[in-house]
Every structure is written in structure tokens, then in C-alpha cells.
Length: 259
Image (cartoon, rainbow, N blue to C red):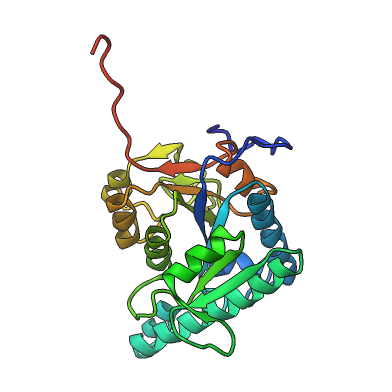
């Protein structure tokens, strides 16, 4: 992986390194330049990135946050009951999932939404074996409503679903091109990391994913790949082992010479 944030997409990419991945996208990524809600142009662009990855041969599933519509923690901080606020946030993720389903199917990608909170009028209930079968048939599965339980974020839901689906990687699309020691949009001196161990993220309290999500990925030896969701062609490049990203996984020391 290159460590230069200025590297441009290079047209054709190599075959994907991962057979099956879960893409985690924040709700805020769907806002585009808006302050709230879903920007359809942005949703369509992200859908195009997913289609490019599927066409390259990767089985895809997604988890989308709900922060562009409602954040449970923000509601709780203002005095709302935390459980009720979290359920409202879960419903926001269903709205985003349906929007992304529409965007994907408009460009010919068969898609299924599965919700951890049953609402069979609008989507399927979450059934692990059915989700696996959908992906084997080339369909994109979007997991909505988090884990179905309050007090868990969509990061944790993404880690849980990645483990349940037997994914080769959890790919997180963010607003920057990897993991930094600080927010690079506020601190120009923030250090960018090309590769990190799971424990590095936890001990340094790097704001990548919840500690519970990172721990779950560590226990299941599933790497986390962090990249800029707004880079054109970035997802397919990262899946092919190209492009700019940060990989979080077990970092082993090289063997000593002559060993």
C-alpha cells in the first residue's frame, strides 16, 4: 500500500485480494455537502463504488450508520432516554439502507436489506444463512438497525456482521485517507499510519472504531482497512491491494536473519 495521500487512482486495478468484505459507511458520508439527511448524488456515487467492487468479483455486504438523520448518543446527551434514543438511531439506519438499496438497484446491482429489528413490510429480517446465500448469488446485503440492541454502535454492528458472515476484511470508508494520530482536518501535523496492530489502536485510543468493535475484529483475526470513501475508485483499488489506506491487523515482527 502506498503511503502518499496524493496518489491518484490508476485506472485498471488488480483482482481483489478479498473474497468477501463488509463495507462500513457512516451516515454522515451520505449527507454530501448538506447539513442533514441524504444527498442522492452522493448515495449514487457510493453505489457506483460498490458496483465496481462487485463487478471485480468481491462478495459485498454493508452497514451504514444513521448519524445524518439521528444520533442516539446526541439525543441521550440532551436528556432523552438512552434506550429510546438508540432505537431511533437504529430506525435512521434503516432509512439509509433503503436509500442505498434504491441507488444500487438503479444501476443494476441486486440488493437485499436485512434488519435486526423485524419490519417485514419494508425489508427482510436478519437471517445469517439467508444473507450468506444472497452474497453467494452476487447480491449486496445491507444490514440495518445495528445489532438490534441499544448501547451498541453501528461500528460494533459492522464488526459483528463481518464476523458472522466470515468476511475476509472489514473496510471502513471515512472522511480521510486512513488513520491519523489526530484529526488531520484540524491538526496539519497529525501523523498518518500505513499499518497498525489492533493493540496500537486500543492503547493509543485512536478514534477509528469503538474499542468493542476493534476487540471483536482482533479476536476473529479480521483486518480493518480504513480509506477515504470520497476518493473515486478508491474502494476497488483498496480491495485490489492498491490505493491509499491504513490496515489494522496483527503486525508480526520480521524473522531474524538465519532463523
